Image (cartoon, rainbow, N blue to C red):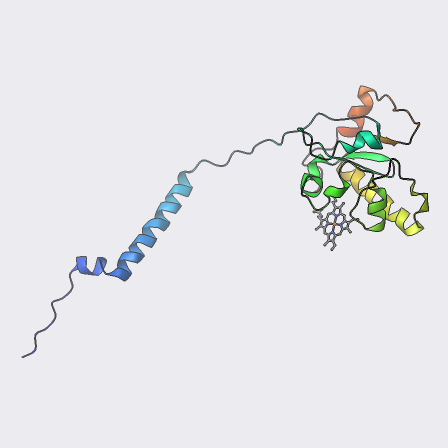
Length: 182
Ligand code: HEM
């Protein structure tokens, strides 16, 4: 007469390697679910806004606004208009794909599809082709809809305009985070 194996007890079942692993996995998942339920909602951290800037700048003055200053402000110019592109920092900030435009007159680069800002003291872009001129115009329009205007890029010998407080507000009040598309 053959000896039959004793029936495994519940304890034997639970402590078998496969079941024990499953129990651990399930316990971990339950822990994650319960923890997620009781975790406080992440608090929306308000975006640190820099004070609005309204000023005409020379090419040399523009250069320092390339995102490497402590306040991280980034400006660029297109067709003589200076834009505050700080909120597009992922594009133009240090290490960004378009960082070469930061703090520069970007007209020629944007017009010709070259990611490079002008390194000249003043870039006279009168040699651009009609197609390039319209490409630059389109970029200017896109930036006008998205970013605050800071002022005019001064040609050598030109003097900065004094902007009144009203002009500062009028140019900038509508550009809230929510209204602008990225
Ligand atoms: C393979 C070629 C390229 C690809 C795939 C590409 C792709 C993109 C993408 C996906 C964005 C983000 C758009 C958004 O989220 O609003 C962008 C932004 C931008 N691209 Fe390009 N790009 C290319 C070439 C160029 C070139 C050659 C220039 C230079 C003229 C350029 C200038 C820009 C600028 C200035 C922005 C930022 C616009 C802003 O501030 O809203 N891109 N690009």
